[in-house]
Length: 150
Length: 267
Length: 100
Image (cartoon, one colour):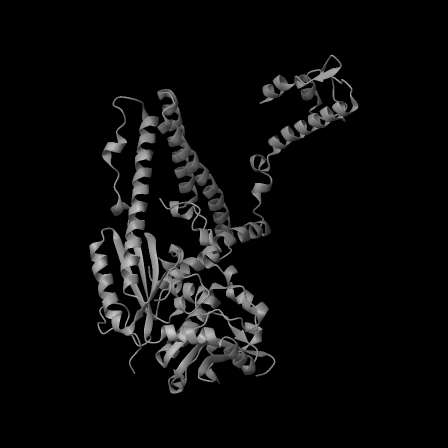
């Protein structure tokens, strides 16, 4: 039986009875997964998710979970990665901002924060400048203090 | 068909010589049989829903081992059917029906699409052509680009100039590769009834080095198959820094779907 | 590479033994660093081309980028990674980093 499509010259391309077999797995997968007539059978399968080309990314995500299971979790304690230093900075800024809002809302001119004491309190006091009241309005000249910190 | 089994569909054919399917095994080693409906023959295997039901299937499809074996088995059956029929429409992997009646329903429901696909594919075969570019061969760094204004700057400046030259050489190589690919596709498509460009292949799956600048599929009249092969030979020799690879004959997977946004409409 | 050897290579990467797992994490991190390095380099080159930088500034930027590239190489070597290993495939969008 003549294979349909078999070229007369067999010098080019595979010419065994099986046609293109054995073929590159990539060639086969990209055809059977993505091409071919799409008919809704009774079993719903979303083949778009089966993108082998993104398997590496899923590998890495899975690696993170597996790594933790086998006790590799150095990133959870590394100060640079957890931003331990950076977090303090953010917390401080938050406190100052909240205090500022408080004062503005209550119309007071408070030179100091009245938040709960923390180990950074001293640092805050050094950095924090009194708010001036000029003509009954609050002057917000705190930029210099902020810049200094950076 | 029992409640625990379903029907895995491979292809739908016209004028199928069923003798050629004797002894043929498909996915999970299951034998194949035919379900007919007015001139259309669906080729099916009975499969266990424990392995091919919705949930198990989803899981198995993510298992590279299972997927590779199943995909090859599916493709082998589709290929055999194509060779044993006047024309056959390959179906995508994992089309499963619950019972022969459902298969017949499906044939009746999708008859128009199936008929037009069969018409397109009759007497034609799909061939694949991939082109790999060698970045180095396509563009070389111009020595003039690396020399800055004479005498100026130290190692840092020299580094920047070198990087700039490399990047523009790379951009040039990319442009050349894309131009070659476009020209290639155009010449090959001219020999075909229909042509499509697929996304480039992942080197991890293909095992090939170099940029995959063209991954084309061409639906060619059987009488023109030789012409296509000859053209691939000629173009491969003509284009510097580009290596061509011809694969096939393939069942016409790339041209079976009507709704896929093909770049070129069949002529 | 033969197809079987190739599938084995791919299969190896899917095995979840601790060494492979850590390598996967490291290559992800280094890929991001490499992406940033490439972006910075391109931006620096654009600024240099604009011609608005002094020779000193150009030299300083160049030295920094050069050292950064060296450092990336050292990190890769340390973890036994090839340049091709530092990449993420975004599926239909292609790879994250253009092949160099």
